Amino acid sequence: MLLGLGWVSGVRRHDSSRDLLILTGLLMGLALVISPVAHNYYYLLLLPLVTALLDYGISDSGRRAGVWLPSVILFFMLTDILARLPAVGPWLRDWGFPLLSLLAMLVAGAIVLLKQRPPASDPVAVPDPGLPREVPVRPAR
Image (tube, rainbow, N blue to C red; front, top):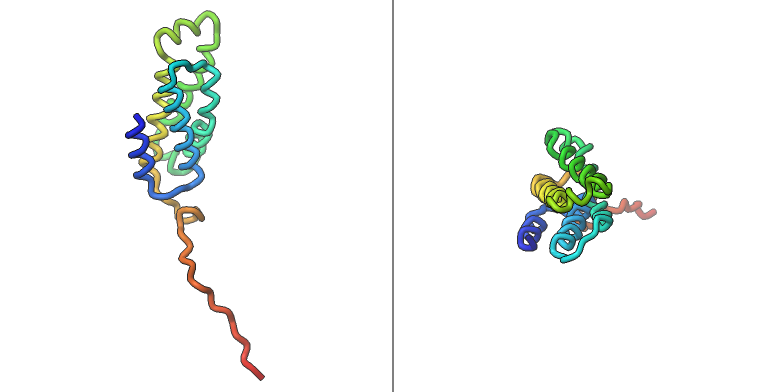
């Protein structure tokens, strides 16, 4: 998983704020998968990933992507809410639904990172050429 995350982050073409949020969320999610003990409230660490995916989902490129992204986010949120209920929570945890929802979010974040292209208006994506600007010179009297 770490090699896949490294590959996805290396394929990115620019460092926009959304991409950095997704990458941060992917790293936190990977830490939750690798760690031997993860409580349900640890999923609060995925808020940067959820925020970036929601931002992508309401943008123009996210609207063209279809309904898969909102359904993954909704699956993650419903699983997190239901896993806290005493009647349903132990059953969901035994079947591994919180882990499945976490993995679905990680895959969604990786897909969004792979699909993104650098926008022309992003100041981080467009490098400053650093050329000196011409200064108007007044003629001497």
